Amino acid sequence: MSAESSPKIVIVDESPIRAAILEEGLREAGYTGVVRISEMQSLLSRIYAVDPDIIVIDLENPSRDVLEQMFQVSRAVRRPIAMFVDQSDAASIQASVEAGVSAYIVDGLKKERIKPILDLCVSRFNAFAKLQDELDRTKHALEERKVIDRAKGILMKMKGLTEEEAYVLMRSTAMREKKKIGEIAQSILTASELLK
Amino acid sequence: MTTPLRIGFIPLVDAAALIVAVDKGFAATEGLDVTLVREVSWSNVRDKLNIGLFDAAHLLAPVAIASSLGLGHVRVPIAAPFNLGLNGNAITVSPALYAALMEEIDGDRFEPLATARALARVVAKRKRSGADPLTFGMTFPFSTHNYQLRFWMAAGGVDPDEDVQLVVLPPPYMVDSLANGHIDAFCVGAPWNSIAVDLGIGHILHFVADILLSAVEKVLAVRQNWSEKHPDVVTALVRAHLRAAEFIEEPANRPEVTRILAEPERIGVDASVIQRTLDGRLKISSDGTMRDSRRYLLVGREGAARPDPVQAAWLYAQMVRWGQTPYRPDALKAAMAVFRPDLYDAAAGPSATVASAVGAFAGPPFDPNDVLGHLAAFRIGRWQP
Image 1 (cartoon, chains in turn orange, brown):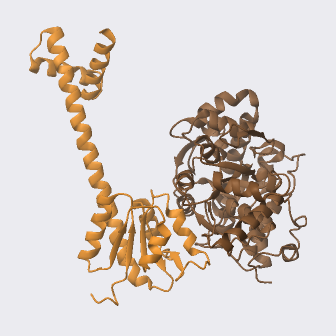
Image 2 (tube, chains in turn orange, cyan; image 1 turned 135 degrees about the horizontal axis):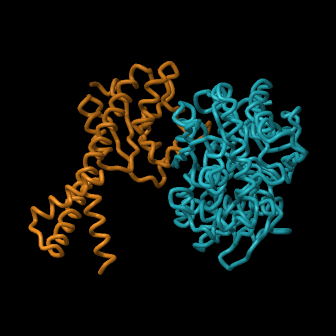
Image 3 (cartoon, helix red, strand yellow; image 1 turned 120 degrees about the vertical axis):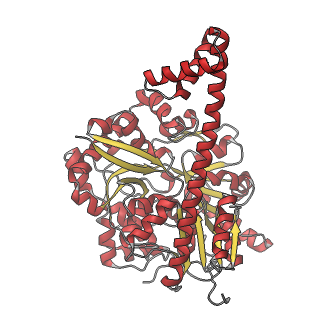
């Protein structure tokens, strides 16, 4: 892609992993001029120094309000910048807000050139959220595993059960009380704490 | 039947009525099942309200107007049936700037004209010595903070666009930026001024009530077309917030109110800081100097919750004064129509108390029927006649 057709893109994101995933996606799609900013101090002057055509920012970033200042007529602004909103396409705005990403563009940049970039950002943001979710679930499962193991240990010691018996006891109790085995294990830990 | 609603808010003390309406059950009593969503930026609150992810929101009054006029963003008409707070902001300066101002001041340090003139002299001195221009932090281009700072300094002869720098900063970054010298002063709502004072890095120079007697700050905002489709829900919302505001303003409830607001998923700051704001009794200096004001923040007291279209006109006049939009009579009308005393009255009944006028410390009394004539009385500004 020639420099002419590859707009300069700035990614403002406090999550370095997500920013890297996004940058990689953009590069794969042929957008070569990508700069990441993760440091929010003097954000505007950094952006002015890069002089981008498009700015992509995550919605959980409080510095979004800082970018809004660039819409204002001000001596500091070299080129007017506006948020990318395609009023004819409410679904794409909704998709981007729900994915947690927003884009600001230099005035006059054609819609056809921005749309694929925003779509790519939305899908990468969603992919990242999914990854994050899986990671959280794995972490949670690991935590639960530990709790169950400790509860098993308590049952084995206090009731003289084998490991297998202790597990079966917790599982059947969980089924009877319509609870998760992790919850039963946690109550065993809490109770044994209290009875110490 | 209960109506599920999602309402966005920014963790500031003037979200009090929203939070208390939910956490004290006033919303539930009205048949509303409200989920409060804490947000990090006004842009997010505005966008999520605009596209319908929120049914209602805690919104800067000027953002409600800008959104209705399509300024700086897409045009989505907003209806504001309830004021969540009047006043509540303060101007905090660094200890160094405070010292410089006190060296130059001629008159009472609580008089905004005296401090603004002192600021003009500090600015002139810095210019002569080749020092960088002073930098002031505020929260949003379309914010009361922006207009209040500008109104104050311009009265003393400081041109906010030429003589100093005004920068947008998210409120949670305000204190850090003052501490590390990125900014010399800021105008923001509670609790951030008090936090700067407690850390010994800031001095509260003015309460906004010094500059404007009554300044609408945040409104409860809904989309105008949504309000037309759900008039009963709007009435229920206003009623729930009226009861919440009453509960908040009753001094006997203060310990409970501050405890509710201080919860981590609500405002998430120390209850004592919130208490000072609601009591209007603030520590203004790290040496322990206290200052009281009955008008520091009004949540529904003295007719404060009733939307006043004149306030909307004043805010529109500020947008014109500072070049954010050229003056247009139809835009003025549209701005005034954002504030909906009719929707408020539908829930509250006819009210005897009428909130006091803007009451600015400088310039002639505000006349919504002659905005350009009013602006002509001010020497500094960016408007096109």
